[in-house]
Structure formats: C-alpha cells, structure tokens
Image 1 (tube, rainbow, N blue to C red):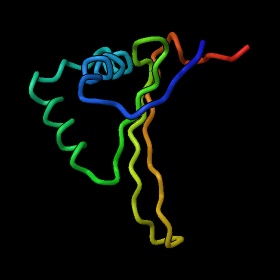
Image 2: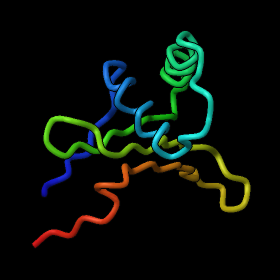
Image 3: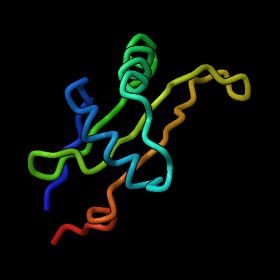
Amino acid sequence: MRIAVRTAAESDLPALLALYRELKPDDAPLAQEIPQAVWEEISRQRRRTVLAADAGDAPVGTADCLVMPNFTRAEDQLEEAQRINAEHHRITNH
C-alpha cells in the first residue's frame, strides 16, 4: 500500500481527530468548538505544520511539526509528534 504525505488542511480535521481518539479512546470528547479553535491557532504559527499521511483517500497518520530556534547548536530544531492509526502502524512495501 502506498502512503502519501501532505500538508493537512482544515477539511482533514474530523479524520485527524478520529486518529487522536483512537490513541486515547477513554478520554472524554472535546467540546465541538475546541478543535476548530486549536486548528486556527496552529495555522497562525509561522514555523508549525501539520502533516497528513494518506492511504487511499483518507488520512491514516499525522505529524505535528514545529521548527524552533535552539541555543545548543545555534541551529533550528524540529520537534514533532506522530499519530498513526493501528491498522496502518506497520506497513511494508513489497
């Protein structure tokens, strides 16, 4: 199965939230307005990008990437958090 990685769009929010719910199924659902407000705040951050990994026509993974200045090497540092749905967690190309 081929995985395509792209910048996530606001229209991906429901599918991305489903990935996060899979990770923490016992957490109470967020109030409807919270994810939208969080998306809008993330979107305003110049050095932050949310990526979506698609298998077919649906996101099966996401990475939240933030490039930030770093004092230890005087270079930028990439911080990221990944989420992959259980079905696609281990895919090998044949």
